[in-house]
Length: 271
Ligand code: PGA
Image (cartoon, rainbow, N blue to C red; front, side, top):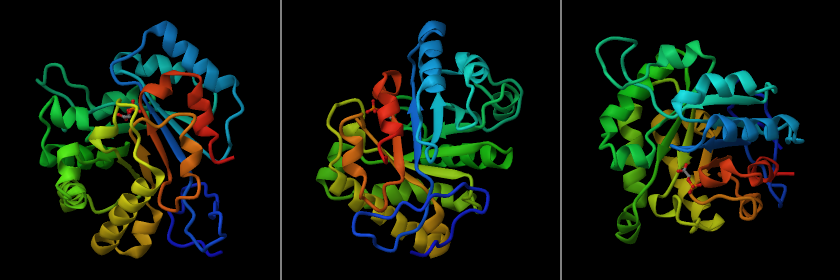
């Protein structure tokens, strides 16, 4: 089994698949997107559960509480294996931008990641591909790592344009971002988010493979092989293990289930 093209900085585990095929090593990654949920009490419970559970040491874990609780979550986390992410950050360091939070502030309170391009930001808050790309560039330039979300709506899937939608969303960022070392991509079909209707492992694999092929065309095979592509959309403790042997599914971005005890099962789903 050979290990191809991975960032030197990452702690790597060679997972292989059931057939023992030759696949690249990428560290399994599970993100928890709390969205606009939680209180001091519930966030304390979630983090304490992560602190006391036996987490698969090969999984990188990132939790994204609402910005009001970022510092609180950072203060509670005990393990180096768990990092904290903002759910958004603006394209400016400071200034007259009422209601925004800055990359510098996110870093100042000890968070190390930011989620950008989530479909709820794209649809409800009308964020464009270009705006998301600018935020991504700014965050990376200032030293935050980015979970970059893409995905098609049900209508787009039905019209057979899933790949071109994903490519359009990626292309805007590819135009600005040249170094993808600190980016994790989350493929989140909009029709699967919060609906209880997850993509099948086969459908996810097929789309992840197309995303990776596109990245290979734009960035070269070696870089494409090093980028983690997460699946998001109704991932839970039960269905997570069914993605285990899918070579291009490198983890999950979890919404609803990240608030529940089963988040630990998702983190451990490769065991
Ligand atoms: P869900 O959300 O797991 O609740 O479907 C996923 C996400 O939006 O990141």
